[in-house]
Length: 85
Image (cartoon, rainbow, N blue to C red; front, side, top):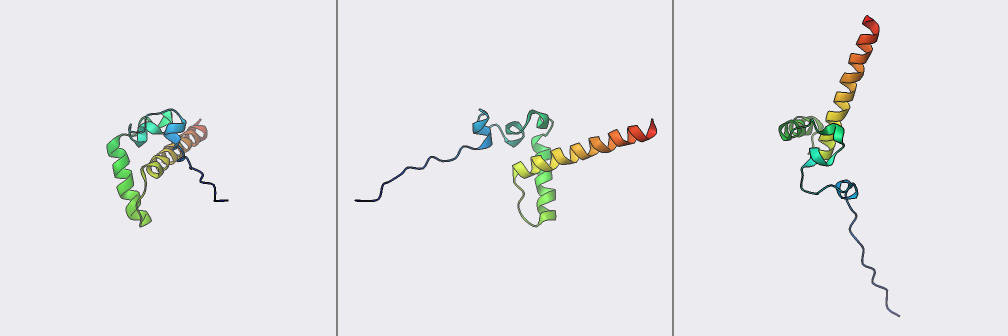
């Protein structure tokens, strides 16, 4: 008997799983809360963080960085409001 030939299906990316078109750009493919991320901001974030990391930062990583920085800033502002009230 010969070895069975099994055809593997390529794994779907997160945009495809979410039902989003694949060519809308990384800031559109992410969560709706990332709609504020422009193409220029994304490119700039990739440039800055790639230099700091010593390697190429992907668009998905740049979106994650931007969202994390935004969440940190919002938390700090909330904490400041609690201290001053």
